[in-house]
Image (tube, rainbow, N blue to C red; front, side, top):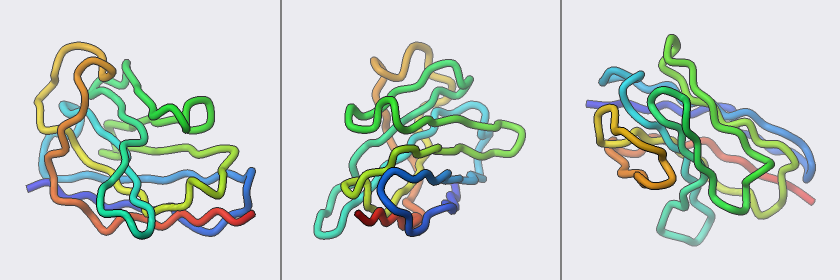
Length: 130
């Protein structure tokens, strides 16, 4: 069973930065793609934000965060990060991470897509004020 613990959220002003962390346990972390998602108030679905391949060699971003957010991972720490710069009010959401269901899938994430495997964690709240 995979467990995910997100942290690093907070209240910031527009233009500022935050770094989110997600520690995963339960499967061999280094063998699975990892992704970040977010859910805004009043919506039921989680929106894809970014993903990184199991090797760290491939990343993929939702269009509105390209050039502002950077996903990275530290396989030795079983942790995936999301560096968020130039935050906007519309980035306000609860941010979640998840692990892809496929073991060491070949190919770029842009073509593979992302299939969440684990139960969602508690998420971490990011609030951006104007």
